[in-house]
Amino acid sequence: MKGTAVFKALGPIDVRNVGRDEMLRWMVYLPLLLGLLMRFGWPILVHQLQTAYQFDLLPYTGLLMSYLTIGIPAVFGMVIGFLLLDERDEGSLIGLQVTPLPLNGYLAYRLGMPIALTILLVLVSLPLAGITTFSLWQLLLLAVVSAPMAPLLAVFLAAFASNKVQGFALAKGAGVLFVAPLAAFFVGGSWQWVLGLLPTFWAPKLYWLLSDGVPGAWPVALVGLAYQLLWVYILTRRFNKILHQ
Image (tube, rainbow, N blue to C red; front, side, top):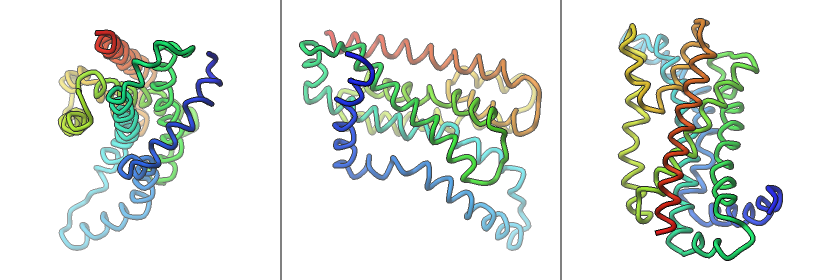
């Protein structure tokens, strides 16, 4: 079955599944809401803290904005991860084995969709926030390096959670992985690269390099992209093994 046929067959089903789930429905709009909140709320917060407490938040603008590069794929990763868990619970994934659509083709569609959505929303949300100005190629580079985190989280939830309830618990636990790499913002020297063992480190690090105009963005982008894709491959193999048990 060709890619366009897969999209036509499964796309409307996904829209209905997300639309009937209240939590998934609002999560889809969360990246745009975050961008708008930063655009209008961040300057007010900075001013209020400077006026009331003489505390300057401006040096931490890059830290806050860089979170979008992992927050956006996290949203879509959870949406797709919960869809996978629903489909596994309903037996839909087992039923695919007797249809013209092979399981690998289904997974390519299912994991490719959050990649495309992440790229699109990063390209839209960062300019929407209106805080940091990047060129088009810088935005595209950030979007591409951010994107693998979405399928990585999705297949992580599907591979290790037995049902949606466990998926929620795992998603909460995985929140640590989306916060810990930001500690590199405060760590100087080579020690910060230890946090590179976490796949969520690379997109924020690339953001900081690009905002500061520091050379070396391309190697960081390539290493980060390859490292995340490696984890996607490893977790997808585990998920495949679980489905065939």
